[in-house]
Length: 182
Image (tube, rainbow, N blue to C red; front, side, top):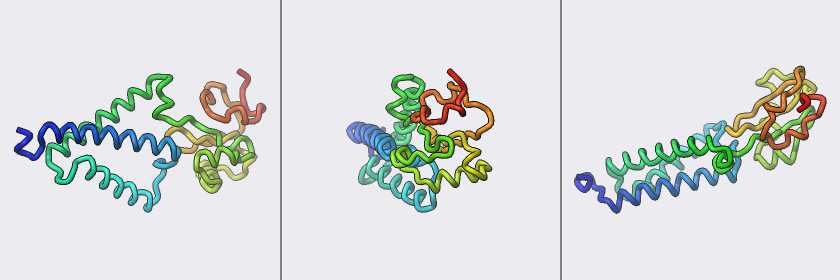
């Protein structure tokens, strides 16, 4: 039956293997380039992602995409996405698919080394501070790049509980007077 729509078993296996390889490649690239890669897209970024998706889709489906090849590719990608979601639930395995949260600003101080490590520029941090209603850096307890690529701002006022900072790279650089004792 599949042959009627231009897809035999060899082509079906090729589609599934191609999906797995491209999916793994995208995960690896995002891991290497940092979680900000896909967090907030400019119009240029969006155009590049759409073009990249078209190229990857064409490569996955082969020279002459067929209905079944497209459905099989889509199904494989959705299964891989579901499996990745399950891997995130396993404590030790999470680090393979998620980048850790990282402190970008501790108190008044921008952590230049962490900014470079995460490919975030200071202008992005200041923009996030403005959106959070911060008018002066003295109001800031810390700024954290989350595993999702979003940037969080914790303001001064209440002490930060240790649980909130568990697993956050650079949490030890947040001034002690801003953190609740463990």
